[in-house]
Image (cartoon, rainbow, N blue to C red; front, side):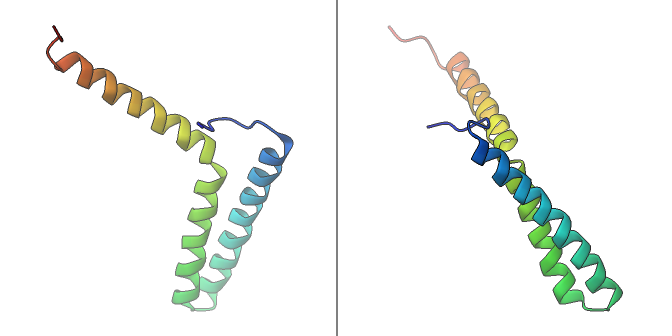
Length: 83
């Protein structure tokens, strides 16, 4: 089943938690940079990017399904008509 929009209050809460974790891990990564700990900062920046993409999961799904639909339509246009 395609999930491309928030359908319940729990979806909103989960998205808000992902946004909060994004901000928290980004701030901690900046603190790790100032402490000259590159490994910790790299991992925290990677986590921050992961949390951010999780917060945008419905938007990413919408874009994916639109692009997928475009590819299917183009493939159908290029294929010869069936007899």
